[in-house]
Image (cartoon, rainbow, N blue to C red; front, top):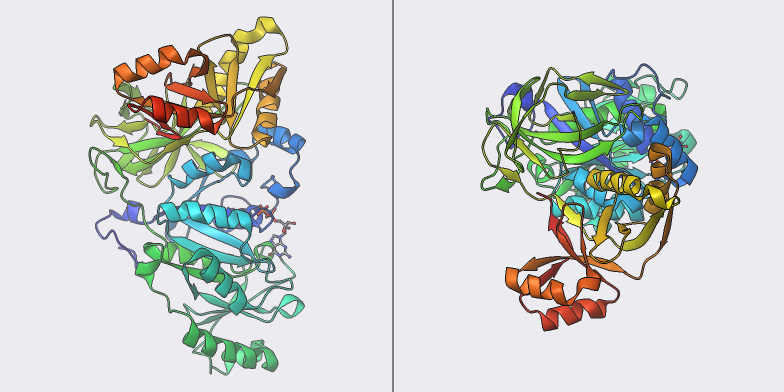
Length: 534
Ligand code: GDP
């Protein structure tokens, strides 16, 4: 057994050593840089600079297109695996732009924890807060990395206070920065009583670490200027009085976040954070499903699709379903049951994502993410098992907030357009509605930028110029309820009715008033803004 904090003591060692997590942050806080350093220290890449994508804030439309073309690591390699100490990390990438919040939400259903990166000069920013709220919905454990400590940053107590106040979570310092900005020399590792010194000269080198016997160890004075040392002692004393001590159980329950200070670009504080994820981050957790929950230690394999990505390699029109394994020990060639269709599927060429290379997965364990190439059978929310009819729950589909009509530049190509749209719908990149009256499609997304990305991808991947245009409809609701009542409702409202890409009935609305009217006139019909993928 590993000497870690666990709330799942019965896991086999291979599962117990897995840590599956995502990084949440505001654009520019340093997510890409930190990811790169994780991969570097995880031995997955040889040198920094191989992770291509830059901060989301600076991304323009053409960057997106280029990224789609390149399928560079940060944006499209949705999952990366690497080893550190005795742990196997699976880092699942979250699209950082707020326009992709639905995708992000689903990604967070596939992880057991999140690492929150904040900029030491900026503290908690809007996007961090939004993503944090999503984590909160699932009580995901959160570990915090306060980045860019090599620059002028805010007072440490102030940063911690802001997190506690803004996010309503207890914060406990795992390390404490010594000095600030240009005078920043490193951190005191509170959890392991060590002094970590930053090496500004070599950004790819792991920082120097010095074992210390408490704060009165004379060793300290050899490395830290006396004014900074006095301040460190003072601050740590205050911290001990004012801030809660690390409570591993509270971390696992998502009520407390340990915070590490560092500088990703200088590779500083990163390995302490990684060790912390190993020690205090959760092992693979129980997966909610119907009719029963799934335990990771079960010997039978099960998993679910949380993301589908098409055309990862534009030369082959393949699509890859990203599957989070919920239980068992998977081996290549296994036959699994595709629960939605009850059909067997032989998984002959699953891939593991080892940094920039896809690699054939010979085996994988609960907690891992594998990619399954397929021709469209696998959709978001699908469950795979060794035969038992189990359906993983909690993977939602949201009603889009923006609707537009779409037309092929060449009217003769509308069949092609339909194919392209269906593919993006299955990827989860957009909702596609086919109105029951008239031709054409209504496309729904969460953020405006997605229309642009879609238009460029349809052109790039299908050679099909398209035009998005205003739609008379403003939002969409799924229609449920008593069958007869639903039929009567459909008959009377044909001009509002459409089918989504799964064939489910949707009511397209122009005004909130439409929804109020249905609720009043059809009490047996239910309109919902989310549907559970199944
Ligand atoms: P992302 O948008 O969150 O992925 O952020 P990036 O990793 O792209 O970083 C945004 C900018 O901050 C880049 O210019 C980085 O070089 C810079 N940066 C990242 N980490 C640090 C750090 O520790 N110190 C300093 N000074 N700059 C950093």
